Image 1: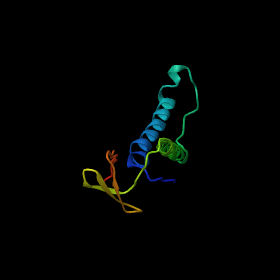
Image 2: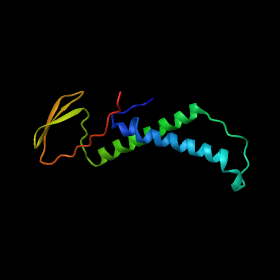
Image 3: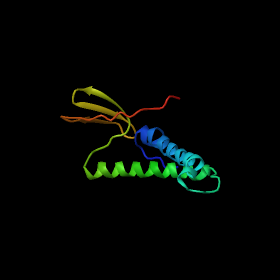
Image 4: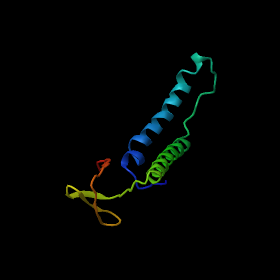
Length: 115
C-alpha cells in the first residue's frame, strides 16, 4: 500500500471508507435492483482483492491530486505535531523540527484514529 504523508481523512478515514461504501452500493444494486431495470446478469460475487485495490487507487489519486494542488499554488506543507509558540510562530516536530514565523497561518489539523 502506498501511504503518503497527508491527513488521516485521505489515508484511513473518509476517502477509503467512501470508496468501500461505493463498491458495496454497486454490489447491492447488481444483486437487488438491476433486474427491475431490465438488466439480467449472473449472480454477482465479491472480489475483495479488487475492491481493496480500487480503494487504494482512489486514495492514491486523491493524495497525489492534493499534493499537486499544494505545489501548483506554492503552498508550503509541514507534517508533524505542531504547537503555537506565540501568535505568529508555530513549532513543528516531525522528520525535521522547525519553527515557522508568518504574519498569517492556516492550520489543517486533520484527525488521528483512536487506538
